[in-house]
Image 1 (cartoon, rainbow, N blue to C red):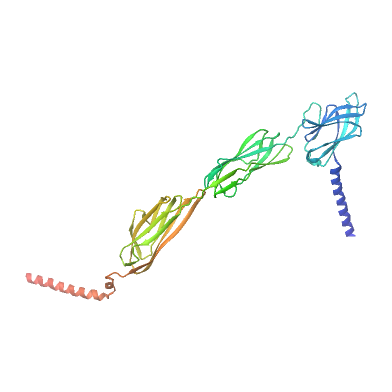
Image 2 (cartoon, rainbow, N blue to C red; image 1 turned 180 degrees about the vertical axis):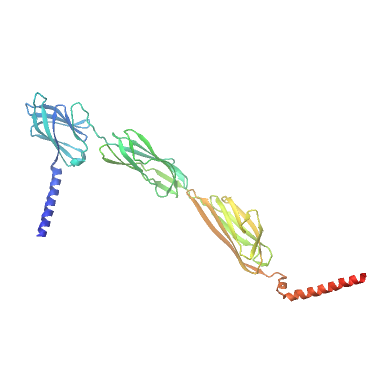
Length: 416
């Protein structure tokens, strides 16, 4: 029993759907209206004009206009009809229901208007237009979007200006206009001068500048820019779409780079304790742009002290370092400094290099390291004396002190 009810429900639903579809296909009534000679009936941008009505002959003549263009003329007797093509593949049928006159008034014609192949719900205008009144046609806005580039050939990292303009070349105002635009891969967004993406309205014949911005290419090649797209509506809330042209930009060259090399060496790797070691740091920028804020931190072990160095070497909070504000491309520099080991052993002295540079797109940070290993510090020539017991020094001193005191004492005795 339950299954039978389900089948019945499905059957009824299918029949209703078929009736709706057939209703659209066979024609749905839009209106039934009475017109006198000179009146008209507007359905969207089509006008059914009652040109001549004759009650005695039970006939009426009609002209059909699409906006200002006449597309059909027809004379009907009662219960006759004619059709005309409608927008989006639809078809409108006009049937003459009756013709009459009363109380000395003008002859009147009653017509029934139906439509097929088009949903009645999508009609934006269905109204009677009395004689002498103007119909309210809804136009079709059309946006012509132009994307202009400041240069068709640029270098990597060089800014190129993009300007986007829009003009309404249609026959009605464009409403709720919204633009979208995205940079193509291989381009970085630079400065933005203007960004007016909407919503906005653009009148018939009106032009507007929508965007002005700069792009920076990040790699060489030939690139087609993405189009700027727009959505907008007319007064009947019908949606339209448009997109711009797609300019081509040729990108040459490569990104800028500061490539600073560092070498670190010692005048000698075998030294005596407390002797001076001269160290050398060599810097060279082999890149094609300057390094900014170049810094070399000299890392000394605890048992090695800094003695001094060239003017570029400064001591910050007890730590020696080299600082150069700007180090140009192909620039070279040799910097020396001196240290003194205080304890025997094997040591390493490090030098860490830091700098940044502008590659034309963004700022890049770089760090490198150069270390002098295996610096052997041995005892000095007389260091063995420091290893003798204390009494070895004290006994001779006491003897020398006693002898000296005795000599002084005897000298005083001889004076008397």
